[in-house]
Amino acid sequence: MPVNVLFSARSELWPEYEPLLRKGLAEAGMDFHLSKDIDAELVDYVVYAPNGSLQDFTPFTRLKAVLSLWAGVESISGNETLTVPLARMVDGGLTQGMTEWVVGHVLRYHLGMDRHITRQDGVWTPDAPPLASQRTVCILGLGALGEACVRALATLGFHVIGWSRTAKDISGVTCLHGSDGLRVALSQSEIVVLLLPDTAATENMLNADTLALLPKGAQIINPGRGPLIDDDALLHALNSGQVGHATLDVFRNEPLPPAHPYWAHSNVTVTPHIASETRPVTAAQVICENIRRGEAGEPFLHLVDRDLGY
Image (tube, rainbow, N blue to C red; front, side, top):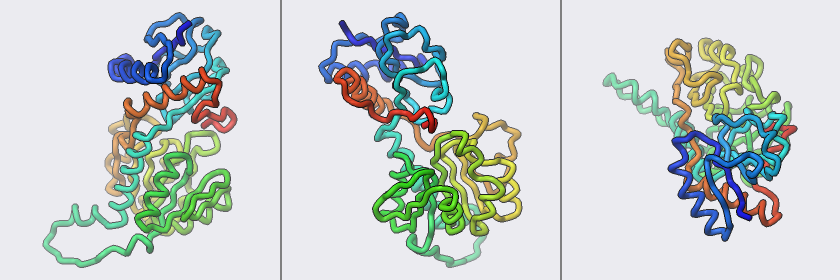
């Protein structure tokens, strides 16, 4: 009997993913049926995007796993009808894209690029930046994306502090955890990058109290999740000069409404959720490998801890 794989994501993604998934499953030597339309009671695996129409998994009586195309699973991890393993997307293309975006914006801040781009007034001001080793960068969140960014920045010579809710150990990086570690990390960091998941424990991680811990004029980069930041607190910190500038790629409401104060603020850079995205070529490889593992009785990759929400 073939393995039945349901593709449940936006229809415009199907032409990209179908040939890649077929190729990967065939190369794994599997007898399979891949389609956008399979009777629920026959489905073994769902290739899933949370913004699709499928929300009720109750009819999927022989389902073995749901394999998400998204790195973020906050909109599905609490779904009470989903009782089988849920895997989030961790793929090389997404990781590389995020690393490139984060490193680019850290270097932009470190080198003072905005100042030279906006000030072409004929005034010669030779104010060279410090070396990377003299600049402390904090990465909040040490999952796959956070760890990749930490390693890339450390390779460039930055003094990097990585913070996570639980203890981590990354060679060459100062790793802190817990509430005490967060206070220490923020108090030392001139540039802070948020790469945490969106959970009840991480909502408003940057708020009036934590923003006040930063060195005056520190800079914020958020390609993680919009709810990690208390927007009102950040705007107040920007207006007071406590935060020098914020580059924000994700927001509580997307697209960011045209009237939102971030758009007009001189010390905010808005980017339209482009820090990284799932690349079909590499994502399909991850999906096919997880299906192979499921059929071989091996552990799935990148399983979501329902208690933690990621």
